[in-house]
Image (cartoon, rainbow, N blue to C red; front, side):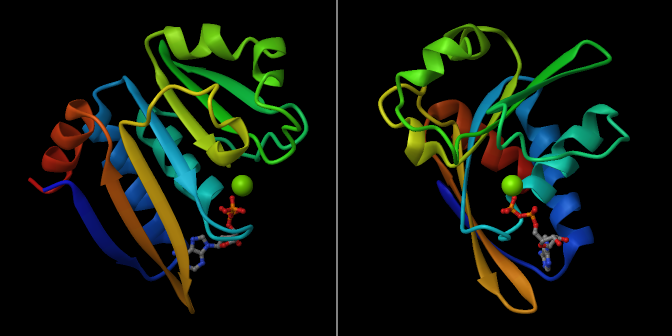
Length: 153
Ligand code: ADP
Ligand code: MG
């Protein structure tokens, strides 16, 4: 199966989806997070980081574009490209270096970096389904298909 649709009732369930996504990555993945402001992208990232052992807060790196984490040796790069004016700007923040390293790249607003980003293993689209959310997860690579399968075990 290359697509999964889920109803995510509340914030706790969004964090849980993050932990199950993180588990399925086995430490290396490119994940795009699509959805309007407030859809829950950063909450999902918090769940992913939580799985690896990060207990603290997670803020969208809206102004710095990327927040790097090293959680007990697991590298996680959290991008928020909302304010990226031009995909070429990714070069200046060392985007290439992040993508070439073994780790998990979480990319909010990937459309702003179109052409300068690696293909997504998984694309997560979050939509409002008030009071909760709807998540649509699509695999874009064979690695992504494997991840989706692991999530459904
Ligand atoms: P984004 O990064 O997409 O802008 P956030 O992760 O910052 O969104 O979430 C915005 C708000 O939505 C937060 O207050 C969060 O608690 C809430 N939220 C997240 N997931 C859900 C959900 N599944 N159901 C209801 N509220 C949620
Ligand atoms: Mg955010």
